[in-house]
Length: 345
Image 1 (spheres, one colour):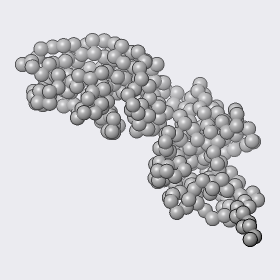
Image 2: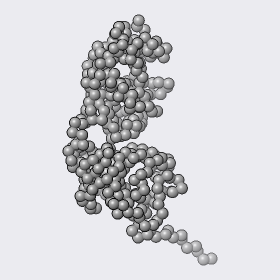
Image 3: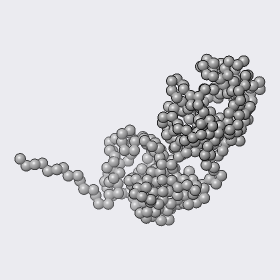
Image 4: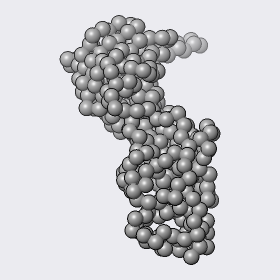
């Protein structure tokens, strides 16, 4: 009996820049473009795209059109906005030019499974391109300027902004902040139209520092603490590239620990400490933070009596009255915030 010859894998076409890309994807299962093995389309070598990729770990994919493909890097923390900070950039396989317009959900279980959205796109100019260093000038709607990528080891590169900060007035998140605290009072304020009212959930105070899709936490005394479960990574993914400092409490609601967010002292490179409470709450509402482990706490400007009665009905410890014009004073116990137990009249 003649033994069967082993099945041979077809040889890769010489110079096939997309062989690795095709080998990782099943065109029948992913909505990503998987072009046939044929001559590569060519453009003007001036297109760039940044895609926000909600895969197992949130990251941003930076791609430059060059020689008929999109040369690609995965950037876990996004592009640096200042020359003071370099970010890791992991070189990945070349992608087809069609990927520059791709948005969609890659099925779970497939390579890179998760949602892909276009974060920015535009044109770029090449100043230098070698195997170890790439210098470009980017012209996008959200990011512009001179950047250099330089190889450090293997597939690991670093990306550095060569220009001054994109937003010179932007400030980094504080390293840590002690939260503002309410004073305890027996009664609701009389001039109630000047106040907003929130539920007091009786949970653990946590401040969340969200940047580059990652989150760290401090407690009510400003000490670094671990966040519960997967709250940090999921909350970071919800905010994406927007840096934010959130104030809230970790409470048990309907049998589940939920991070109830009630303030935003810092957002998008801008401290909001001197912004009135009412405006900060409107800004927070605009973030539409709602997920399996977090929620924007409700607030009610005006009459606090219905809020207190609702708190009593839900067996909550009380309500917090906050002056609509009050700034955020870190570490202070302020009469502009008042904790009123539900049993008070």
